[in-house]
Image (cartoon, rainbow, N blue to C red; front, top):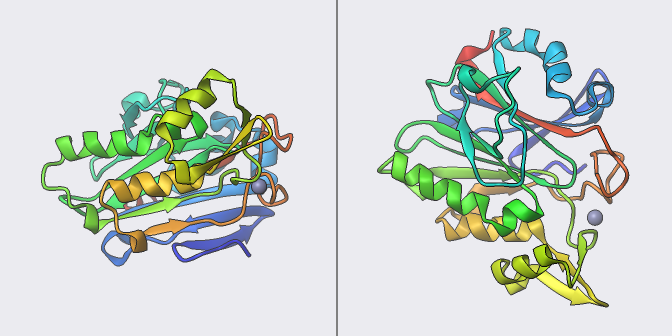
Length: 258
Ligand SMILES: [Zn+2]
């Protein structure tokens, strides 16, 4: 159904999943998957400790990094010193070959973004880019920091996956809201429209623009079409009434798994 190039749909034990298809050069290095609506996510109600109680045995019982998400731009390493039971405040996790934990983030209308490359060495970054995070350009800021820390990074040797989020027809905000006013200065005019005192934002479109502004080729960007709110039978959506259960993004080194 909503599967596109770059993603593989799975449905096991009544749990829907979008597995990210890694390019050949990263296939043996990284694993990433988006757990959508399903039995496991219903039962664990967005609680990463409960999710990991059920899943960790599939991943060699290594620890899980699950930051407390605050709609900021801070990225932490996927290291056991940041892992559960700690919940450091962050909206991104960086995985590299030295990472000794799995990494995760949770979503219900905000957008999961994964970026990976083998340049100058293998790395993968998970980002929580909701309306506020996108207005703050968490994608651009993370890649700017990354290129400082990994000199020689080549954007054209990078891939990005834009996961399921709320669509441009469902995500409206009141014009006079201060966050709306801030976003109007940061979003490209291509990615919002004003109607009847409301502003409709295209979060996915803006994220794609930010990735391309960082030099990622359009063909290296994979998107899940559809919408968390319009396709609520497949995803969780805060605006559609899912108060607790969340979409769960999980990723890590394949070599650290069983
Ligand atoms: Zn929608």
